[in-house]
Figure 1 (tube, rainbow, N blue to C red):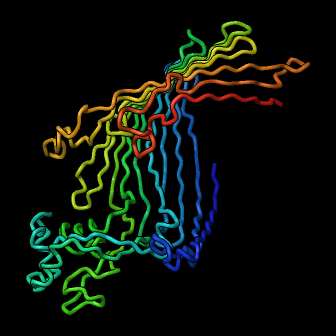
Figure 2: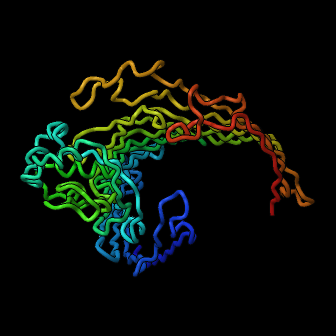
Length: 446
């Protein structure tokens, strides 16, 4: 199969006049009205190669390949994605499969276009005498190379050692490029002929994403500029220092200029995810009027880490087991149908999660636990939710279903989020927030 696609995106935003005139508590918001639309042209192809079938130990042997070329307007340019797969079925009951692929994600329209908005940033200068030796091994040399004699100026050091509220900008980065991931999966499907309707699917996955687009706070931008091996890096271009005289808004020599800090997204982070997914299902007619449908979806995460330190790409932020990222989860559903009536039960399991960060309780990156006594207990407990439902169908004169009445209870036991959580914030939203809920309805079938 081959094909092509063209996409065009136009966007426009304008705030109320009172906001543009800075008559509210918020900072003024600029218009989003790019000069050119966001356009992409794509071509793709997929092919499947059957090698063997219907012979001993090779009920099926096939290979597949797919590719996509995308051409974006602007600096993103051309991107490539592909996928290679293989399937081997030694018997009718058993199938093994594997895939290897590269995927990309281009920056959003608003990441690369539009005018920046005003913000205010608390700046702690990394070249201050109290901080110049607190960063990387490169910080002092880079500060000396950038500031020269100004570094010893008492006026500069007085401002640099203070925390200064500096006007800055939140904006786009027209130089962003695509994120790219390499992934591979290995798994299998078992459907025993001696148990019709039963199937087990098992998949191992490993995903690594490079050049992840991430936003960096203004103060981190300044510190990172000097903590990298030299000043020729993208962070140093996102702010400007005053020269040897007094700045346009009264800045001391060497001070970061008001309005010069640009907080924009950059391609620098990476992520790793690794785990196992299991899908067990059973569908069977036990008699003419009795039908069972059961399914269990289980996920076990082995690795979930982000690498977002621009000065140390190998510095791991392990989020596995932290709030919102449990190591184990499962969903179970069971429906029993007796003629026109269906009884349903569902269960959702969320494994225990840490009450603090992983680094607080465990050694990581060659460092001991950062704060092992930060909280008690150390984990939020595992949680199991129960749901029940009932459906009843009414047939028409021809014996075909015409209406279905249904109802049920979600979170039957009214399980609340763990103590201290609301279920609404980042991470804690993995838990139910509303408690026990009832629902009912009617569905017309045509």
